[in-house]
Length: 371
Image (cartoon, rainbow, N blue to C red; front, side):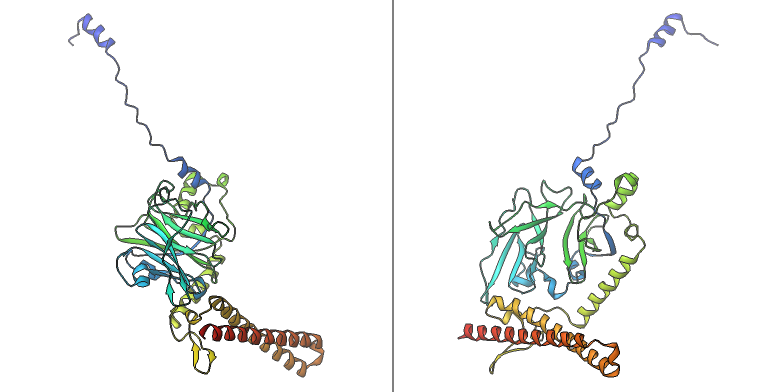
């Protein structure tokens, strides 16, 4: 075997050892890490992937929760094809997006909408573009979606509250995971009557598609015990990798599915149409009958009429209860306490007087306003 000269052997020994290049792992945004550790514990009922165009049709809300619609349907023009409008349950106040800014407008005298005004308190540098408004029934808690430095992805969902003392909204807060992600997350809405929530996201979706999640809203914020979860499990829950992982024993979801089905069925039987002339009949005088909340000229009467409807339902239920007690007493006096009948009769007649008084007050104020 041929041997290298001694000088060559020494040179070979002194040859520098090449070091492997150090590859730095990309660091995650600390806001995302903190948000994941505070992931809300949410039970997801179901999900459906639909075309982004027309996705709003998947949102089923009861009349008491207000109405979501496209800008074009509210303003009858196509200048803002991707903007959303939310109309409150009384139909007299709306919130909408235009050119990335949120506005509100009020119905004056039940006839004309006033000049829209931008929402005060929402920093346009922090929350722009903004869209997808939703106001809770309390008239204070307001949700919307926006991009900007406060977002961890594209669009994120934010919540704020209206301060009636200042006429401005408080600083919005990012509602966190699992609702928000590094993708676009938007259009959260709640049906408080059915305790059902909705929101949309394009995470893991192809171009032009969006996933609509239905979930059970929490009355108070609940988070996971991160010490009891593996990191991979927490990542999965935060990103909604599997809605089945949120079901637990499944009882909550089963009950929510029944409520959701009832909500869908009621809308199929009687579609929500705010301006329909078949909603109710309330006679004002011999020549005038109201059929929709928007017919009331006195704005307070819209709320009072809804109170009247609720009272009439209670009156009907009391009447049925009273009839049952009387029948049971007639069949077997030993099984029914006469005082129960007397108390029910008293409650019935007191409520009946209240109903008649409220009905008269609404009617008289409307007659006066029409003069």
